[in-house]
Image: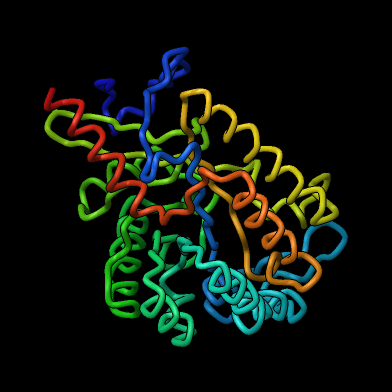
Length: 309
């Protein structure tokens, strides 16, 4: 374990675990664990109705005057909460697969039905801000308040505080310090730099990082030069799963995060890939689907066992 200060963003770690990856033992001896991360942001995005100077965009080729609403974009987000989330939910329920919601507090406030589903299924929540906003333009006090409001809101709507934290796109140099200061988080996922969790230490403070991914996130389906077909995206996910599975069978078990957005994957023409991925995982065997909270708890136990020897 490396003595890297969680507050010191001037140091970059280019080595990580290096050639000698930890000999991980996942539950049931799985070769790879998979966590579906449902980015639930609908209703918390930038919106003129919420006092923002501009709303979200459909991308290049369309512009709306500052201060004007874009009803087309608003309806795209509404699709995610009205229809898309339930299409994903039905497939996960059919296969008995758990998921983690990267959820913004305000988004959950605006859809009690989703909150009931979270409570009924036991799926966990990783806070995705109170609003789905990039903190890069926030002051320290504003970012601190976003963390506080997110935790309180999610506790109120789901009955439990969020287990982790995931910033929109990327953190500021103070985010991790503010998370530790607030307390109560098992982990953050504000990094893309590994296939395994790792722990940072600062004095008596310990902070777990469970890296996320941009490779296996279907937000790229709507970005320029990204995936234009869901087949491309899900083929990439399956190829990643097969390679990580092979590495796991060779003695180096890994984890895999897959990012899903209800307004994207929840479309009928895209969601079939989710079913195909789950069935391929079942064919391979030795693949365990886990909530992110359970991965964090398991990893901390692994670290405790190593230290007690």
